[in-house]
Amino acid sequence: MRSILGDLAFAAGLPDSDNPPEAGTPWRAKSAFACYLAVVVGVLLVAIATTLILGSSGVNLKDPPFPLSHVSIPANEITTLLLTLALAKRSRATVAQLGFKKISAGTIFKMILLAVVMLMVTATVAVLQNAILGPDPSEQVFTRLVSPRTPIQLAILVVFSMLLVGPIEELFARGYVQQGLEDSFGKASGWLLASFMFGMLHALNVLRAIAPTLVAGLFLGYIWQRTNRNTTAVAIMHGAYDSIALALAYLGGV
Image (cartoon, rainbow, N blue to C red; front, side, top):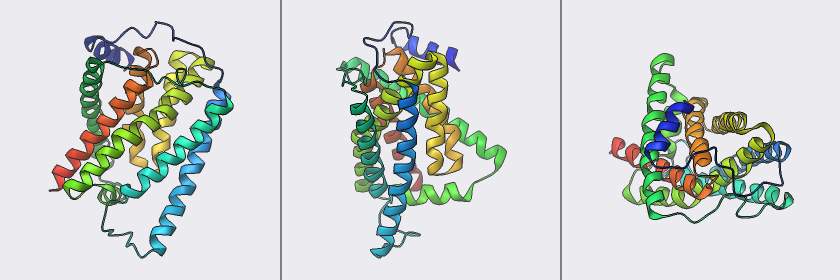
């Protein structure tokens, strides 16, 4: 996998991951694990609270009038952002250390192309998984509840993907967690562990999401390394990946 990703990154003209990061980090694995556990618990509690609030408000959770992701994405991402920033502040991390940097239009284009490749690979993983294990009713129900049904709903979710999901999840998963793990255990071990944790986090949605998102985490984590820990770059890649997936889900349901 790492060799294949390296070939893709080289073809996209990305720098070598062996180049050292611009600055060291004041946090390590202990803080990375603490942030991860805080986000898992926080998102789980917020999801339960959101479900109770929607149910008590008269929303039919089995057949809602809007994608539940219109509510769950802002709630979950804001929770993730606040908890990550709290740990980052405690660790005295700077914006530069978290990897938010200026990028060129060319890099943005490369990230979008890599997002397409990542989507093709993760979709293949999902298809193979279903072929081996059979259809998962819970995954089908989840997809129906969160997928857009109208162009306006799709547009809202694309905006959420680019402005919330991509930047916040990459700040958390790569900028803070993977960086802390790499600085403690080394690039390869930190990358693999962070990718595994990223996949496991998505089990909060459905169990079948673990394998595809683990592969996505490997892609994002490796490109993050190749761009000299540029969280902005992989945030765009992540947002584009989700946006394209949502568009395809919408077109498939029309």
